[in-house]
Structures are given as structure tokens and as C-alpha cells.
Amino acid sequence: MDERQFLQLLAEHEGIIFKICRLYRDVPEDREDLFQEIVYQLWKSLPGYEARSKFSTWLYKIALSTALVHFRRRRPAIVYMPALPEVPSQAEENRLLELLAPLDAAEKALMALYLEDLSYAEIAEITGITENNVGVRLNRVRAKIKKHVKS
Image (cartoon, rainbow, N blue to C red; front, side, top):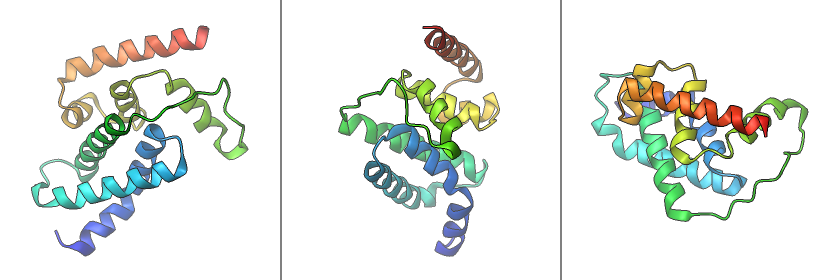
């Protein structure tokens, strides 16, 4: 795959990267830094892409791995507000982020993939856990979110 093809695929799938950046970073500047780091890691990992899986699956795997490493390394002081400011065009997304806030990084990653309508098999391939474990963990995460909503 050459640079032009890579940039074309990146443009087609940049929404995935933006979602991951928004999920793991609260400040726009930090999101931009994470976005750049993810693109760099994708480019660096490109020779290892063998097209046995979809490009989006490979992209998720690299992007989530990068976000998790980046997240652990920086350990930002995150303060969660009781309510997010309402922006009419982003109200739904803000509510979703509010619901995902109490989850740990691995749980957020699972939910992000689940909300993208990926199959358990695809999620397992991206995260490196078994398909059965994906189902178990997602059930636990959904229960955790329900408990948070009730409180």
C-alpha cells in the first residue's frame, strides 16, 4: 500500500479516530495530540497490515492500543462535571460520554466498538480477547452503566 492509498483509507475512516480521541481525551488540544499519535502509529504499522481483516478492524486495533498507552502514560487529572453543557447538535453524544465516564479505559474501548455495531468476533480480534469474554465483559459494562443511571 502506498502513501496515497493510505491517506485515502485514512480519510474514509477518520471518524473512528475522532471518536476514540473524544472518548479518551477531554481537552481539544489533547485530542489533536492523540489523533496525530494514532496516525503516526498507523503509518509506522502499515508494513504489518496484511489485509486479512478489514482496514477498519486493523485501524481500531492500532488506534485503541495507542490511546490506551497514551492514556496510561499521561495520567491527566480528569474532573467529571455532574452535567455536560448542552449543545443541541451534540446533546446525544454528550449524554453518551457522560454515561461512559465512570468506565475504565478497557470498558470504554469495548463499548466504543460495540456501539460501532461490530460483531463480537470483530471486537475479539481488535482487543485480543475471546469472543465469549467479549460478551461477558459487555454484559458487565452494561450492568455498570444501568447502575450508574439509576443512582
